[in-house]
Length: 308
Image (cartoon, rainbow, N blue to C red; front, side, top):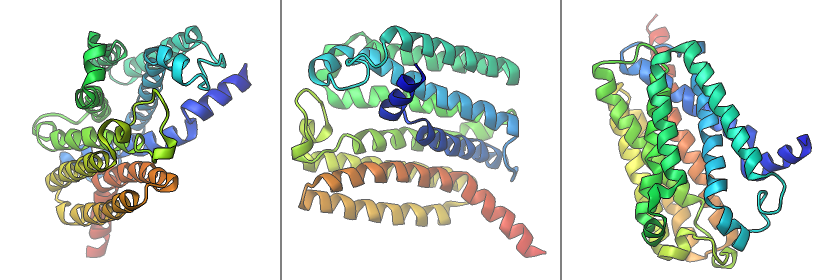
């Protein structure tokens, strides 16, 4: 039993990779929320624990919903995946989802029951995604609408995580957090498009990648546009905590690297270059999160010490 779940997580939801990424994301969101209300300090340990655990379980729940949503297509086109080949069952995944939800609810009740409406809102939107908003055929025929409608879950998760900071309210929530959510939405778009850019020889029948749907040039162009909008949101959020200059430099360097990577892929669409775009998309998300939370706080702490 344990070995089956170990294989499943390795193939479909690498616990260590997701855990580290979501820990950084949670730290960034909570640190940003303290900076947005002019308090240069690290988040409370309890807030970080609740945010990180719940964020991790949100993404696990999304993976489980995807297994249900894509089951028929996986049986037909991707029988090598964990669920179609019988490694784990949909019934077992339903139980895992329920356990994850109970853990989240317990943490919310322990930390701040006022988070419950946001928790339910995330679950509700997740359920609509699982049903593909009851317009599956229309969404499948309109990939752009499919993309943005599914990415809207991310601002909800970002909002939940920032709300774990008990002092985050009032004007700070209405200004800086709005740009933080904007950047978070496009971070998700960057990762979603980046992981579905494939070299021609790696395309699979029945697997809807953006290179297959839109063509290589349009897919890379859409990825670059998402990067630019993510950078814009990050810079505007950074401006609210007086860190615009440094954040703009970091975003500029990252965008330069992305431009070179996209051009190399279009020049020669090799498997390694497509994989590099996928890896860069994850690195970009870490860069944005670092520039909006830990970086400005560390800079402020350093500046205070340098004065004395």
